[in-house]
Length: 339
Image 1 (cartoon, rainbow, N blue to C red):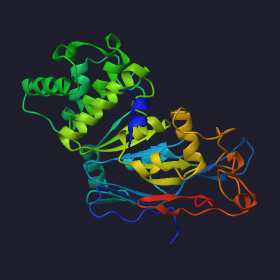
Image 2 (cartoon, one colour):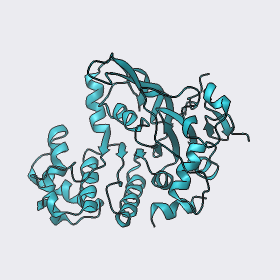
Image 3 (cartoon, rainbow, N blue to C red):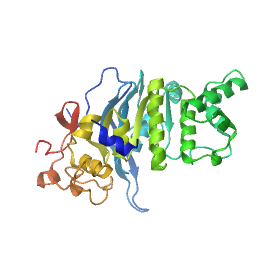
Image 4 (tube, rainbow, N blue to C red):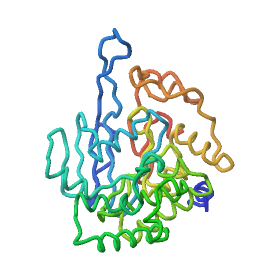
């Protein structure tokens, strides 16, 4: 089943999702601002890549961050992974809290508890290394095993889990297809028995016929190991197929947030409606989004989406809407969600 077919079958300041009891990951008012120079002789200017977002991920669940390039989803993923430090806000993963202060013990724990699966299966694997060494390298660095036989046994087990024959351990990435390489990347991510995976556009570089296979593999592994996923994608069909909860990002802010069923079946924001129409036009009718996402160096006044919104009125250009409840487990930042 393709992700697009699956989509058809899916029966205080706002920018805040109420805290979720027992959440494995909790992001609270997270913000990231960079100082950039637009030109050689320009003065430094602030660029707000993420503007105070909050969400939670329940154990064993999948939170899907969806939006166009420049929406801020990659920055959020990098903060969760520890590759970036937030300018403000809080991040909790299990019982560990991460902020502006560097915590070496916490970082070492995060490197085992959390693992990424990156977008490009071609660039993510060292072409000079054999597959077996690529998969067992995290173990050699973080959790050394007793002997070479133990490493071989672990690699064999991981290859079988991702649907590859054990003989692939002696091959190099250049001998594998794109889908096979992504399976190797997933096997490597599982080597340390993590509980949280950050999936950064995990199928966007693959043929459509292979995408569904990899997505189904990820769901099967999630069920088998009780994994929790943070999924990053520009494709709402992929997010709708995988996620239990969805956050729709635009210029570093949530336009819509809620359960998968609420967001997919009852989209309240024009941006979400347009993304759904692009993913499955035969099911969802909406006016296509014109133009490109504005620069975060010069964000629009009022609603950040109003320059591209077919429903925009004068109020949208002057007053920024807040993220507010529009239904059970469902929030949207639009002045006209009741109309």
